[in-house]
Image 1: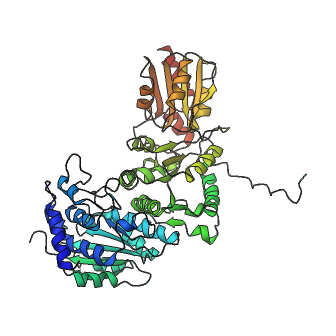
Image 2: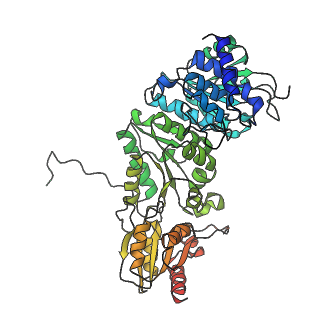
Image 3: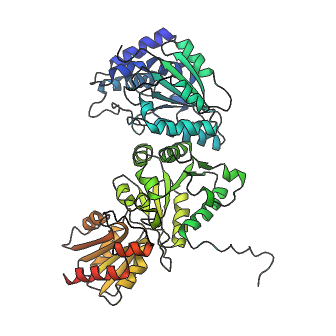
Length: 229
Length: 312
């Protein structure tokens, strides 16, 4: 399926979720990153479920999960018909994803600032077990980085040289107090490689995810239109 | 007589629960490639020298307690059995949301090991007191809580917890009893069964003080090192042999187990006295024994409170 067809399919799937989507702006800010990761970067999908050497995608920013559920449905983790019940009383699909309920979801999220810390342990743990193949990608929001817990994880990921760990910050300018000087330099100072990319340009995103440096965790800052634009 | 085939005797083990933990966890790390120890600086200097294959599974995150628990959860997701260790305020209070979400909500296991108990370092003062830990963990779903009263119990529970997959909290406290009991099955241990006016339940390190405090009183004494899940069946059996007066003495916040015990005895009108560490800030340093007296957990204070309850 080509990029445009996939995109059309994802938008159709998203429209099936008729729940009261409170996080609408962030729902679409992540769509291109999610699509590129699942189509071009990560070895995930129902055929790899339960394989300890699968890649891991951790949606730390659990807000606005409609795009995520659409990607999971497109991958075959969810039945398309299930999307219609989004956030309903009998649905497994909440406003924040729950790994215990939803197949393909690696972490439950919603409270901000938890994914990076878990990703550090997961990525390091896989290496300790001799599993150097899986890549761990964690998606965070620029406002989510306000939480201090992220910086504990950023610092230690750099010190441990977690080369199979990638963080992608979808930056739609939602951090109330901003990040003067940018997000990338903060990660670079902690020993990460970091690339800024247009968060709507699929080829640029694919290159950014590939542009890793040995022995360093990798950051992609995916810039999208500002939330308030 | 020793022969060449006899295994060398095990070197003398530390009698302190905390030191025993460091000695045994090193051995466990060397033996079990599935184990990982996560530290936030505290404890690092006490570990024995480890072979490289085990030392790489000691993950020190520095003074970052949110990551201590978050990384432990990630290690569990990778397939390891994480042991996270610090003092109670830094293992339970500071990263409480990580315990709630990264472990419980994600539904992954970890063994949490604290040291120091409620006031194991009295000079440390209020910032280092740990009496709130079990009460806070009690708000979470499915956390086994072990409170050993002797280094041998601590070792047995550590070995059991290290080989399990569940969520467990092992609360080490060097304020010990003289002898160890077999505690790994979690059952309430009848220690003194001759009394009839009340059942007194001692949790972990308070047992010897409870035995001294109740000498000559018409009470039975039972012991547990596993307050969660509490052996309610054992409690009903023990209290069936005495009048429906129950005293529980816990080495952390007074009243922590009151709801569990009262619920266990809901079929029977009963009286309950819950003794333990007080909530009020004492802002006192001094010795562990000074704090026992302040919280009336010394034999004299316990005896007075239990006798008054029996007379009421």
